[in-house]
Length: 230
Image (tube, rainbow, N blue to C red; front, side):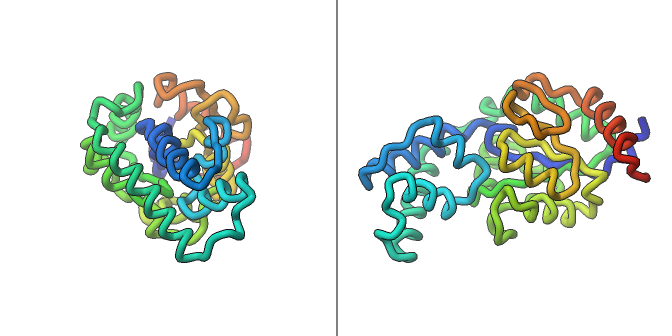
């Protein structure tokens, strides 16, 4: 395969590069309980890839309390959740990079391809620094650069633009349904991590199953099937 047919590979952060999803859950659960709302890990699946304010709205809807607070009160609550989350992040180290990700990144870099990040987390920079991965990414699209959350494709299109990459020549890697939908709507090739992500073009059960050579081959076949011209 001619590697030049791929412009860029764009990663989600939480659940793909490292697992901070559990920290998000603990922080949201702590805030929800303060409001008398119970959320569990199953509910937390709905929050993956969703912005902080939109996540708060989902939690308030779950407790039928979405009309009980002003916008400024909601913003204060979201900030409080972030404070809880940042406390958990202090425990993060490079050892928390998920299995297989270092090898995947090395393979992509060896092919001379651009690597981007598409994360709605306002703390993406903090997480990358804790993991010692800041220098790996050529462009990072985070919540500060977009106005719409996944499944809207804005964050992936923003990452492609920042990398000067054509979307249908780019690969996105996600672990959430909303993220896969965003990748597909952007016109990109979707790699899904998690057996339930049936809309993904290429699917693995866990990050340790990500194989760069296999992904390249699958991408090439996808290009042929879709008659994309490179």
